[in-house]
Image (cartoon, rainbow, N blue to C red; front, side, top):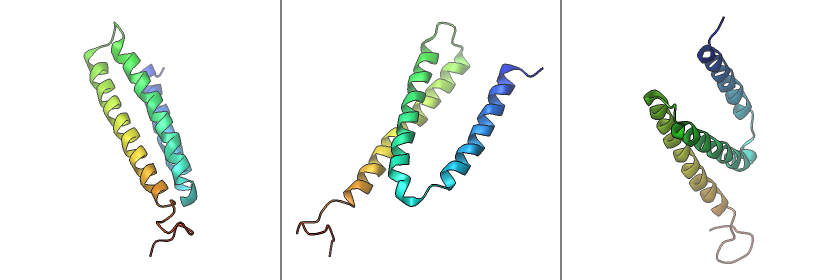
Length: 103
């Protein structure tokens, strides 16, 4: 009978492989919307980690792992916004106002 930790690890491994396959097949035109979606998922991870850390029965291990999860998710959110902003600046019109082409 597998424990809940083993089941959680199996789900994590399967989600990793499925996620890699899905992202690998995304066309370059959809990277900005995909980045926005991953920012939303990371925000959910931050909220979940905060809830786990703040629980009364949280062990030291869960607090450390929660802190690592918060740090990784916030880093992903901030870098995702920076990359999205940089990509959107590429589509702004140039100083001439005609077509946005830079020369």
